[in-house]
Amino acid sequence: MTSTNLNSTVEAGPLAEALRSLRRGLARATGFALFVGVVKTPAQSHRIIKLLAETMPGTLFQTFTIQPDTTDILAGIQRQFGGDISGPVMIVGLENALSSDIPNPPILHALNLRRPDWPALVPQPVVLWVTEFWLGELARSAPDFLDWRSDTLHFPDLEPGQLEILDAATWDGGADTKMPRAARMERIKELESLIATNEHNQDAFIRSTVAGWMNELGLHLVLLGKRREALQYFQKILSIGKELGNKTIEFIGLGNIAGVYCRLGDLRQAALVLKQALDIGAQINHKKAKINGLINLAVISLRLGDLKKGIELCEQALLVAREMCDRNAESSVLANLGIAYENSGDLQKAKELYEQSLTLRQLTGDREGESGCLGNLGNIYIRLGATSKALQFYERALNIAQEIGDRRGQGNSLGNIGMAYQALGDAKKAIELLDESLAIRVEIDDRRGEGIVQFNYASVLHSMGLLDQAITRAEVALNILEQLEDPNVSKVRAALAEWRKKTAA
Image (tube, rainbow, N blue to C red; front, side):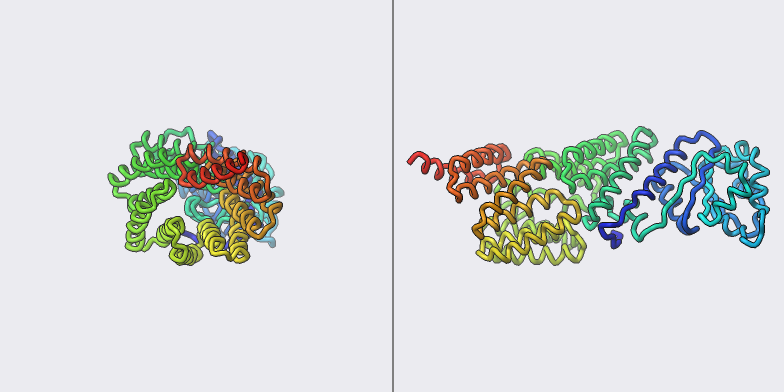
């Protein structure tokens, strides 16, 4: 994973728009077409060309570099490529042959003179890369040639990290949760553009590349809480894998589909899909199939209330993660073990496991996981009666979730902070925060979270003496949690039974 320090103010907007415009122009060109790429520095053009090549799979980019002694660019291209020009031609290095001391440079005179020869000799789109300093000279000395241009694209001066926003490798294909929300939204726009341009191309290599873009886009959408949209992309990935007979793509699609169903609270469906993923993972001996399968099965078991099975699966997964030296997997397992021990009542053991997980999350830069661990530790302090300390952990968790655009994390944290205020006796503040949390749960289709917030809301109303309203909220919570076979059902039923007795007395 590549680590890049981006603050939340870095956006690739103007750069991304220029890149997309150029990419569309190159894709639509059916023969010679001239584009002028205006950059701040020569080095910038090389980085943009590299990015263009990565985002236009199956397109052969050919680069001609102008040397100090070059006097005829077209002749130089002919010498280098002959008649074998089968993709867009990138012309770089014009500044090498120009000097502010020489008026009417011969290279530009030849460029203007040979204008009629370009369409026949270079039957592919051409991008002439120039710096802003030399654009004026090009317009003065080669106006006829410049009249050929289909578009002039101005690429802004790059802030640190702007090109990285457009590069999947920087963000581990969408799984890197360090990405600030603004950068993530810019990356999503780029992915949507790439997919729209290439989705219907039937070339096998391009189809597999599109599947990779869809997978990354789906992971971004999951973090933003857009789970149904993410599910559609993951299902398309599965279809592409089957179409190509590519088991690895099928495995990735199924694994992420299972993950979405788990987040939606449909644990039975998640388990069914996960079994299919594990079967394929075993066939292809995917190195992460076993560890991911154990972790996901453990999560499903814990969510269904089977603590014994959940702990057994977590312990197996922990051994595998440590054998593989996979710190991300290890931190995830430790957090889930913490949940298991917390649910069993061993708060000290749970606290130790959460702290170990938090340390690893911080070492690996997993901001989403760090936020989750802080929230879990806050829950422990609430149960230990240290409400003020719990509040500090919850607020740290909320800050991280807001920074990275993690809607699920924001919903969790707001709900936790609300219940902390309830414990401190501020029911009005608690209601305000639970309203915010509930709105997010509904927005992201988090049914389990919605049910839990509804019950917490009911508990606050009960403490305020608003018994009828509390019962109504608790009934909504019970209906949701029963559908999901959530282990919290028994707690909600017990509270409802008690409250109903009070109304009957």
